[in-house]
Length: 68
Image (tube, rainbow, N blue to C red; front, top):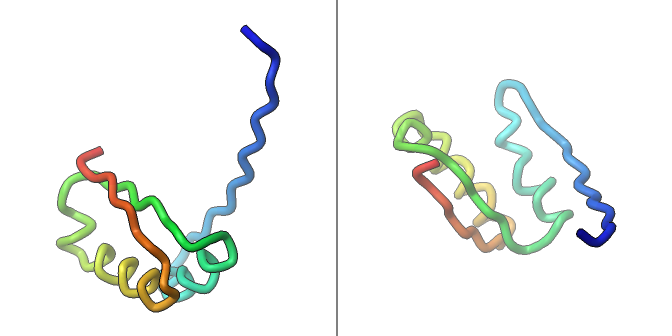
């Protein structure tokens, strides 16, 4: 195996209504987002649409990977 360095900074936002600031934070990182989620609970509870609305508001292209 060749030597390598992996650098993966992570920032987690937790709390009530933090999704309302998702678009502004995501837009600072780029113009594409990978949305990874499981079954259907995220769609049933409304979080899915809230996330898409925020990302669309900031013209961020969403690539989805569901069923995790």
